[in-house]
Image (tube, rainbow, N blue to C red; front, side, top):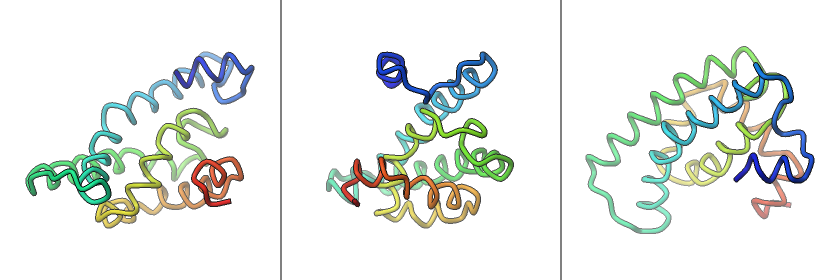
Length: 135
């Protein structure tokens, strides 16, 4: 859906060249398969009060740490998730960071310095501040 909306609006959030587009798609897949479902276990449990077993939260925490362990060195080399430009890959991760940091998952997330540098930069974007009702 994000790709469709970007294309429909003539947006620039998906790179035009094949290699950069593939990298963006790859990181969007990593977010969907290896990050968001684990972050959401913490959100459901702590913010929405939908109880999870402690073992489920432990497993989700380990999976988050693993995913962020892959993302951190990537962000140490480049400013944004998929490269030099802000893209849909960044946007796909952002809601889960916003809410995950309001839970004990924060302890896992903050152990990854390059990820946190990225987060502190992208969360200040005027469009994100508006979406997150911070503006």
